[in-house]
Image (cartoon, rainbow, N blue to C red; front, side, top):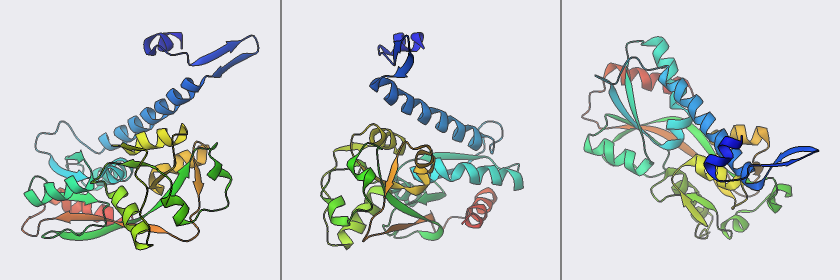
Length: 259
């Protein structure tokens, strides 16, 4: 631990004759470490679905929620039914997925945006819900519920523009006649947002898929919305003139069966 403290230039533990406890910096670093371990686990799970190097692999683009929390499971199941399949995944935001598929850079994409996909074929893969999460010490953590107007008035930690999660949240609030406050911070990954929320920076609206472990461990607290439910579709997209390779047709079947 001292080596880690020296390497980071931070005091992570308060040491006393009565024992040790994490400093404020140590709590933040521990949260980051948990994110790294979780990401490593997802990487190992997804890599188990791949064989050899990426030579001859078919490519897929996926928005971050799908790439991090659904695709690893789909690839594992794909490997069980098509062990010869090799898939290379590009994890980008939904806008980049749609643009890449439309340009022909990727034969298949997975998105979480409510935006239409002009010129592309689409297929609903799953449904997802965005929920409000806060740190355990946040005043909202003790609230029985929160209305959408109160949520819209508070600057949140948010994804960058082009993110399907951000667009779904903004569209839902706009549908309720509300304009959300400008974010207190914009981060490019869900993992970064989760860590920022847990450290007390601000609340966030995140996919329930991405925070289940944090909620179970008490790192984050869900705040129920009393007058709004934000549900979105996760979709596969591809060009109508694309003849999907057999591996991607099988991946689509696996994803649909996982609803």
